[in-house]
Amino acid sequence: MRSDIRYNNIIDSDEARQAQANADRAPEQHHADINADTFYITQHYTKYTRENHDVWRDLFDRRWSMLEQQVSRQFIEGMKILRLTRDRLPLLDDLVLDKDIEIAGGVKVAKGTKLEGVNKFLHSVSSWASYGVPGYLPAKAFFACLAQREFPTTVLIRPREVMDYLPEPDIFHDVFGHVPLHALRVFADFLQTYGRASLLCDDPEHIERLGRLFWFTVEFGLIKEDGKVKVYGSGLVSSHAESAYSLNGVWEKTRNGPQSAAPCKERPVPEWRPFELERICETPFEIDHYQPIYYVLESFEQLRDAMNDYAEKVIGRSGLELATRR
Image (cartoon, rainbow, N blue to C red; front, side, top):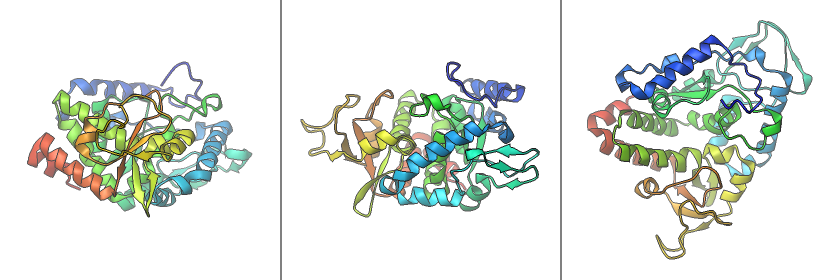
């Protein structure tokens, strides 16, 4: 995590340093030698301060006020399944408090209280789990987690002074932005297949293409629902401003026509394009401004099926069978 951001550093521990070192070795390892379980750390829940919980509440309230107008209803259902609450930061695994804590608004929660974690609910519907990590994971380490139906989750929360924009993931981005869709089995299946294909792939061209697919779907994807375009990508779900911008798009008039948006070039009104995996994989992106192009799914089944076809191309039939084994 960036040293110039004043986090409440609840991960300053030998456990976290060892986990990060394990993850950092993954790019040099053969995929069969990577043990994703060694990347995970304890979420020291009682170390969160009241201010941490207050920041979570304020972020939650700001986004929740617009979610039902902007976000896929299947995402909203996932939030309900996970029992995410505005009053306190999400807990990943069940916990009995060993001390009193103070959550949002100064509310006290007493020692001995049993709190339920999101994994209890997540595993029951999609066989997925979220586990704490010390910070940024190299791509190969990240893929190894997805391949075993586990999502590496940052456990730090942004400080208030960077509440509007954080240049790296935190628990709000990861849990509020990503994890609700993991409760949808069809999306969870897509994500595992994606992780397995990316982990096994050693072709630089396909690795770049897979990175673009993740960006334009998992991070910045849109979907049609009930005749409207809705948000589902986590980068949009967790961004008040870019989600509104993305939903003010216009459909591309002619495929690759003279008026089509240029990749990486900012524009006041974004362009919507129908989901097409090959075209997505050929579209470059930049991370430091709003996207000029968004790809719109018809359904999450369309995404899963396209990923299965592409995974077979990248890792073969035997690899696909392994990747889609539940």
